[in-house]
Length: 242
Ligand SMILES: Nc1ncnc2c1ncn2[C@@H]1O[C@H](COP(=O)(O)OP(=O)(O)O)[C@@H](O)[C@H]1O
Ligand SMILES: [Mg+2]
Image 1 (tube, protein in one colour):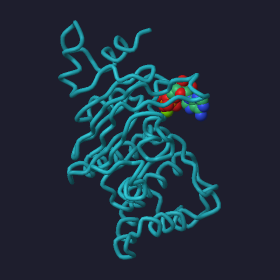
Image 2 (cartoon, helix red, strand yellow):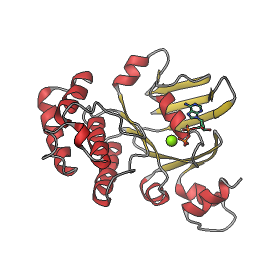
Image 3 (cartoon, protein in one colour):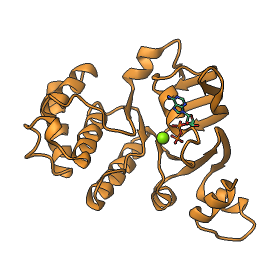
Image 4 (cartoon, helix red, strand yellow):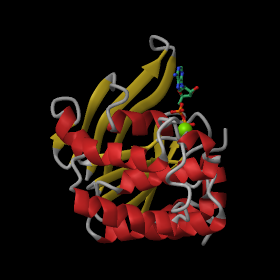
C-alpha cells in the first residue's frame, strides 16, 4: 500500500511547481497506472515515493511506514525502475543482479531460481555474462526489470517500464506485473501507453500540471466524460486539454 497525503514538490526554489497537493492511495493487490502529459509530475512523484526526492510538504507512507522517518525499512520493501536504465555499465548482467541480491539480502537459492526464470522469460540468458555496456537499450531495461523483481518486493514502482521493450517482452512484463499484484502486493507505474493502462490497470490516476485531475477504475473514469463509453485516450485528451 502506498499513501500520499497532500504532497507537494517544487524545483528551482519554488519557481517550478512539479507536484501540487497530491493525495492518492494505491491499495495492495492493485495495479495502479499513473498517466499525464510530459512534465505533469509523474517522475517527481515516483522519485519522492522511493526516497530519491524529499517532498516540500505532505507525507508518504509505504505499507504504513513513513518514508521520511522509516526510510530504510521503506526502501527494503520497495524496488524502483527509473525512466532511464542507469546501471553500473562495467558489471556483467549477472554481477549486477547478484549485487542487487546482496543489497536486498535475497537468499542464494531463491536468487538463482528467480534469476534463471526471468532471464529465460526476457531472453537474456546468453547475454548475462557480458558487460552491461554492451547491451542494447531494451536489454538494459530488461536487466533492470529483472533486478527489480529479484527481491520479490512488496511494492514495485516503475517509471514508464514499457519504453524500449519489444512486443514480446512488453507482453511478458504485463504478465509479471499481474502476477506480482495477484500475490496481494502493490504496483504503481507511469505510462504513456493508453492501451496498456486501459487493459492492465485496476485503477488509473491522471495528473496534469502537478495536480491529480482524475482517479478511479476505467468505469469510473468513463463516467467523467459527457459522451458514453469513450476510450481512455479520448478521456485523457479531454481532461488534459489546456
Ligand atoms: N531536475 C529538475 N529541475 C527543475 N525542474 C524539473 C526537474 N525535474 C523535473 N522538473 C520539472 O518538474 C515538472 C514535472 O516533471 P516530471 O516529474 O519529470 O514530469 P513527468 O514525469 O510527468 O514528465 C516539469 O515542469 C519539469 O520541467
Ligand atoms: Mg517522467
